[in-house]
Image (cartoon, rainbow, N blue to C red; front, side, top):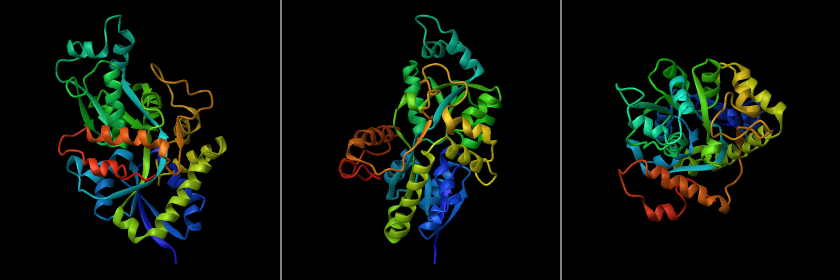
Length: 337
């Protein structure tokens, strides 16, 4: 009899490994009956995983750390992140006003100096949308702001917005810019609402974006199921790295209303080669180097510095509790080598 597993996913391009594994029967081959349960927000996904309403999750890599440490008011849970699903795939998009400011800076000016001089708006500080407080999106936004002489704690305000609502929030003027995974940057550009100014690859190359996440207790109670999940997702990631036609097929599957529910051509922008309308400090992605890489490989000791930086920067987002040095040194929290 197949074991039933409920996996929480968010409607994003990088949910592709789960969708591919389902369509190509990689889960079935591991004797698993997987139900992909679309979640409205990262906070909902986190809470459902913590309280056992889902068994595993398409998870932000810093979210796994935050859950392990109980940061940001989340329930403290021992979690396991045995597979990095993808690296890259995020971008920063700014509205027309902010794009105009960036384009018109003269020598001696920075975005930070313009903001501090109050030349943009008097009513409120500029608002930057992020998908979750503990996410690569937040860390990448903070890096980009500092590169532009902006103090992320003083000069701007952050607002948490679910990915699916990010473009609508920009359209309504509720936020001035955002960092989100695809396809929502491309969607904002397609609708004439914004300009993409940076990618995750330009801000933090090779950083782990999404991981397979589960609680330690579920992993210990279901070792065969976890091994099957890992095997199926690794096969799916390898398939996604297998060429243009595979990625085009994945875009078609993702466009379905059960998954991302957006046109296939929008999804192909990220999966095939690049996001649209990229300017500024971004890398040239048109030379056959995809915007997003699907990993699925075991972590190796040479990757340890990347994960150490991720743990340190995630913990630095809050001062609620000191970092547990022994736990940090003893396994980098959820990530195993």
